[in-house]
Amino acid sequence: MPFCPQCKGIMIPVKEDGMTIFVCKRCGYRQEPKQHELKRTTTKKREDERNLSVVEEDTQAMPIVEAECPKCGHTQAYFWTLQTRSADEAETRFFRCVTCKYTWREYD
Image 1: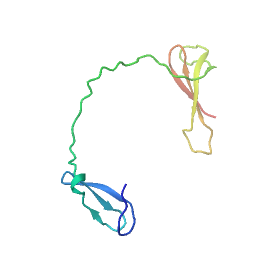
Image 2: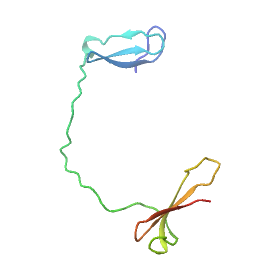
Image 3: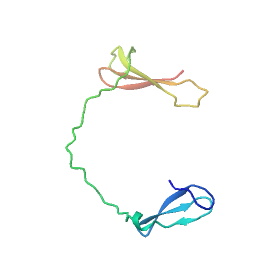
Image 4: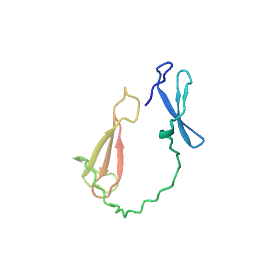
């Protein structure tokens, strides 16, 4: 990142007419690119031709606790917490049944 020769502020890149120039955020000084630095910027849409495989199974690493599923009655569930309300309130506990994948929450 270049610095402005006048005020020593940071110069940010700005695209104009397909070329990138640097403009000082503080004083507005503009630095035209030197002849050897001229690069036209073009936008190309690149298609990814790689063959990617999608993993369909649920492979999350969460602890398993004893909790009864309200849907199927199974007694084991995955467990995690999130701060869903303001910071001075308790976290929300989430459970996901190991068998049927039903998700429920508990508040304090």
